[in-house]
Image (cartoon, rainbow, N blue to C red; front, top):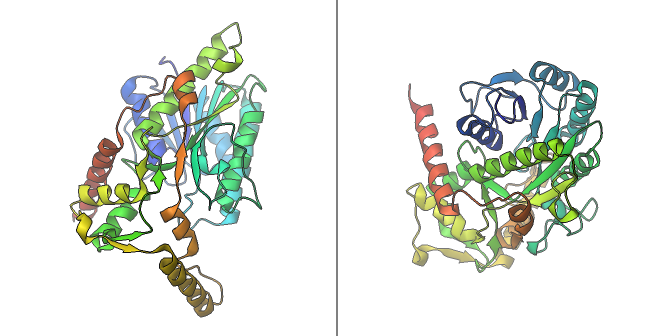
Length: 365
């Protein structure tokens, strides 16, 4: 058997799950892989067994666990923050209730040794202030101080995962990811490329000096694999690691270790897609002007839909466009030996190429 076999990837047809599955098989870390996802028609890899189901369904999780007998589980499933189907209720069902379903099934079936949870850097961020080189000891932020309910529920799930460590023989850890992009991505890259193609890449809100940490999906998958291996090493060891070497029960920020200016990243994606913008063609919109436009748009949409819909142009966008979000990843480099395998630009090139190839394939008769 391969070192991690058998493996269950929950949410294995999303961008990150797809990259984890692909790397597991290509590296030889696993050969016996089961994937459970609500949509198993996308991002498929030859070899794994695919189970259609949701982590929010106790029956679906129990079935996937029974069929896989997983020793290692990657819990990747989560509604995307910006997806049209994302609602507070959905976040609660998947991130919180779904995580509890998983833990209950693990305790019942007793085959799982290592559980790696995909958390979010947003669990320490209130959603509107700058955060600079945050470390893992930064206090977590929950509602009402937390303005993003998505991050609130991810934080609750992360706490559940950490508290499950060393219960019923299970070892756990969580990786906190910033904005993800890459091959198989159906959110970040498609949105930026789509905007670039209609000329929105020429717009910039604010002075453009705000820094952002990004994470290429290939690097994220690599970090998850390292965590799984280390947890199994701990499980097999007769001695507990020192506190400054622990992996189980711990959380880790993971990034490309290469902060970029937010708008430089946006324009780099556009350029890779053949929709580059010269610096002299960039139209800088002062933050206060865009804020005024957003308020007007929010009120107009609210009035026209009697409060049933939200404006696509909103004040939340302004915070995202102009804030600084960077994280210190010393801990994951020290304890897991993580080093990014791809630079941010290499990731952009691979991600855009994959997206354009996929888009062209959809047009073929």
